[in-house]
Each structure stands twice: as C-alpha cells, then as structure tokens.
Amino acid sequence: MSFHPDPKGMGISLLIALTAGQLALGAEQARLLFLGPQQPVILDVTIDAGQSDVTQIRQEYAKRLFRRLDGNGDDLLNEEEAKQIPTNGRLAANSDTLQEKWKSLDGNGDKAVDLEELERHLETTFGPPLLIEMAAPRQSQTARLGVDLDLDGDGRMTSSEIQQGLQRLRSLDFDDDDALSVAELQPFPRTMVDARQQQRRNETVQRIFAINTHDERNLAAERCLKEYHDDSREVPHSHIAGLSERWFRGFDRDRNGTWNAEEFAFFLSRAPADFVLQSQLRAGRVTIEKGADSRERRPKVEMGGVPVELIARDMSWTRQASVSLFKINFIRSDGDKNGYLDPTEFGGLQSQASFAEVDFDGNQQVTRDEVEDYFELESLARQTQLLISLSDETQTLFDILDGRDTELSEADFRLTPREIREGANRLLQHDLNGNGTLEQAELFAEFRMTFKRPEALDISPEISQNMQQQARGQTDLRLNLSGPPWFTKMDRNADRELQWREFLGPRETFDLLDKNRDGFLTEDEALIAEQMRGETTE
Image (cartoon, rainbow, N blue to C red; front, side, top):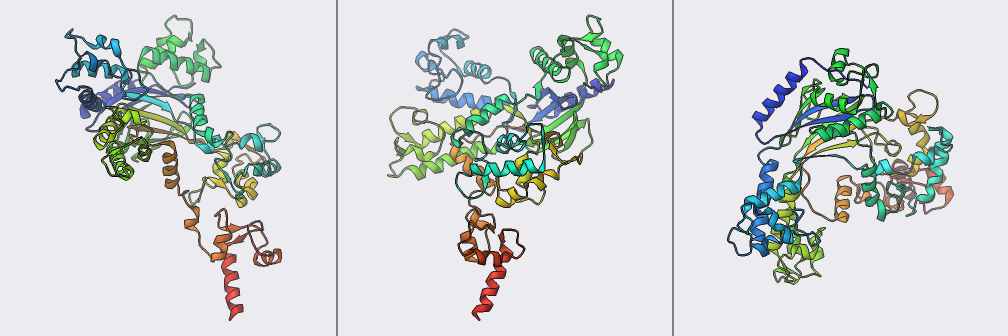
C-alpha cells in the first residue's frame, strides 16, 4: 500500500474545502477512499447542486406531502391524518404508515403534527444527503464468455480455444438469426436478467467508501487491510510505501511499530487528500483543485494505478419531464374521455406505480390532478439525495469482439457471424506480452466516477429497456440498411452481409457473387451483381 502525504496538504485541502463551502452555500462535502488496484486514494469532494440543493428539495417534498395528508386544510395533521404518514416517507400502497407511532413526532405535545415536525421525520427517513454506490455491471460484463473461451481453465486463451469456444456458443442463438446478442449470452434467462444485475451489484467488490464518520473509517480501514495486506491485522511501516517513518509513528498510538485497523482509520481522518475535487452539476464540470492538472470538463486521471474518468451530471430536468410524460400518457390512456382513468385504462400510464398508489382517495378513479400530484411527489422523493456512483468500465471480451474497442466502431451489442469468425484475431490483438495468448490482465481497465442528482423518471422496466435500445440505435437495425432490395430482404440479421444460410438462390450463384471467396456477400458485392444484372438485361 502506498501513500504520498504532503506536509502542506492538510492546510491546502482545508482551505479549498472552506472556500468551496463559501462559494456554494448548499454544496455537499465528503471525504472518500477509492481502492485502486495498486494503492488506496483519499479524495475530498465538494458537490455543488446549484439552486435546488438537497435541503430545498426535501423541504419542498415535505410541503407537498403535508398538503396531501392535511385533508381538512387546517395546517395541522390531526390524529387520523398523522396515522397515514408513511414510515419510509414515500407514498405507496404497500408502504407501512406510522399509525399509533405518529405520537413520537409530536414534539410540542399539541396532539397534532405540524410541517416542521414532519420535516424532521423525513430528514431521518431519507438518510444522509449524499449516497455512494457501486454501479451495476453492464450486460456485456456479465455475458458468458470468459469461462467458455478459456477451455482448459488456465487463465489464458489461445487462438484455437477462442475459435472452438465461439463455435460452441452458437448453440445459444435462440432466435436463429446467426448472431449472438448480449442477452443470449447471459448465464440466466432474459426474465431473470434484471434480478441478476441487482445481484451482481450486491456482489460487486466495493471500491469506494465514505470516510466521514468514525464507523465509516473503521469499515474502510478493515477493507484496506484485506485488499492490500492479505487481511493482516497488523501492518508494519515497511509495507506502506511512500509514507515517511515520522508520519507512520504519528499514528502508531500503541508504539508497537505496526498499524492496526483502528490506527489506520485514525490516519484516514487526518491524512491530507490525494485529490481535491469540485463537482458542479449544473455546469457538468469536475474541477481538480489538487492531485492532477486538467482543464477538461470530464477529466480522466490516474488514481491508484488505474484511469478514472470524472463526470458531473445534473438530472434535475427529469423531475418536470417525468410529470409531463405521465400527464401526456394520461390523456392518451383516457379512452372514453371522461376525465379519469379506471383500473383497465391505468396501464397506459406505463408507470411502475400501482393503481392504488395513485388513486389517493380510493374512489377507483385516477384523475389528472392525482397523476400530477403523485408524480410530482415521487419525482421529488427520488432526488432527495445526491449520488456518487463508481462504475467499472473495464474492457470485456464481448466489447472487443463487438468492436467497442475502436473509436470508429459500429457496436450493436451482438456478435455477427463475421465477428465470430474473426474472434481470435480480434482478441489476440490485445495480447500485450506477445505470448500468443490473451489474459484478463491484458484487458484495458478503467473506472468512471459520476457525481449526479438521481434520475426522477418512474417508468416500467420494459419501457426503460426500449429507451436504452433507442439510445444505442438498437430499435430497428434494418432502418440503416442499404443495397439492392433483394439483398436487404435476405439479410435476416441486419448485419449488412449475407451468409449462405441467408441466401435464397442456388449455391453456384452465391459462390459466383462472392468475389473474394470469404463466405460472405457484402453490400459492395451485391451492388456489383445488380450492375451485372442490369447490363445483361440491356
């Protein structure tokens, strides 16, 4: 493990943090620990969320929730109204309500709950203003390739292993289009993909920790000892590179020449940061105040032996977008134009919310006002925290085969017949040590740290998947096809090439048109054939 403390660093970090606090009144500040592959890195982060900071959003949510619960409009929640306060702060049909526990909110003993008392309850319920998470892996990261291509399990893939493995994987082409989609390569059926992604999120090794409280620092220290010192309980100075003996002795409280987890946690509380970052969400910029020199809006810096891209993303616009979307869907779904949705029409909203959640008065009629009120509340609730998300963007075997390792790639999240045929050559281009095999360590590693306000859109998983596919150009691959009509119609998998399986004419015609004898008819070869046919007709 290595550290590089600067004697002046503590003062510089403190000065920058104080200055940031003055410039951005509602900014959130945090100290983080990132576990790089070579060493841990300490970061001091300030997140400026702009005019609508977390405190303001929580206050606005409390006001709207209070108005919804205050049935008689007297600016107090009486016993019956207070019983309906959701325990978790979120209105939902399956959410528990306080019931008799509402009395614990009545701080002044007036047998009612006022707005200020509700705000205190929500502040506790929503938790800290800043949430840290490891992002769920991409589907290309969970695709079953490594085990299938490393046939002998020695951690190295040879050319013959790759080709044999890819040919075996053809049995997973369930839709028989001669291409292997990222969904077909999942180790579980498609209906289980979402659940598996969440499970993978839970299984993902935590590489970023908040170290602002005593308990957080103890947890991070334990993880560091496990990551870099084989779970040793005592670490001598010789095992911590870059740290002077004087610094080491300063935190060795029991003077036994080693650090235990408690002493290491004490060091994390006092050590100067390796990086000081200022994240401005509205501007979409991350500024590095200390640790590296970069003027980019989205800088990429080396942290602990791996590149880390730093991104600021403001998703506050999705609050209004969410409400507008469901108001439009309400109009479309109200088939009989009677001004409300009954249970049979409600599905047209395309929301994850249930009918009972939106039908607040329980009269089996969801009005436009109820739709607007519910989704305004829900959108606010989704943004009552800021988020620091760390995602592993390490290159995968699927990415390379699909061409995502090149700037000019046309990756379509599936492996076409040509990509499968050329698989060994594509993968072995990443054989950095030239030993004729590919190892996991030779794949390019990178992380992405995103500072953002969470997205407020509340849409069903099916709609969300369709939107993601549209963004990736996956919705209708045939829209981008060109060439003679017979060529595009035969191209069943829309990969701009015809195999013999797709060609509807005789074999001798296919071989005649395949000028370069590579087993594929390309668009250029089809155009030549069309030109020859025209000349013959004349």
